[in-house]
Image (cartoon, rainbow, N blue to C red; front, side):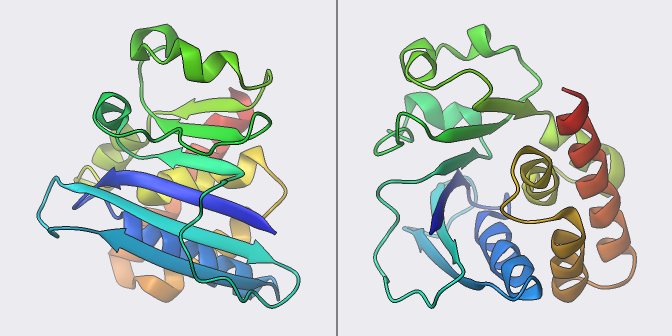
Length: 186
């Protein structure tokens, strides 16, 4: 079973990202589960969502405590919430940032992860350019598909088209592809 925990803030599409990951897994005939977890539901408040993907039916319903992958949609959470809690020493980290890793001041967390297990993508910038709004979720999903063999980009595109329609879907597909390409190149 592959387990993902997504951290972000209200309004960044954290819950929608989890839903789209599960839709993408279903498109690949896999079992999936998306579980949102949030408090006050106000714009900007910390939000967490959990995703599980497996070949077999998933019976767990609790939060993901030992994620294989952390997706950080808002790096300001590094110093506000313990986002690294439970991340395995061989886990993966995908961060929405245009900054260099040393600028994030998360050296202790990075030191325990193997080389090539930490990735960054300027997801907010891509979203602003193509969507006109700072919602990094589909960019990060596109980048995720470039970094792992858990899901394929075409399945994420299917999920985007299932969740959105018209220009919104089209532009989110462009964002996901751009992030996928950037992650492969980086």
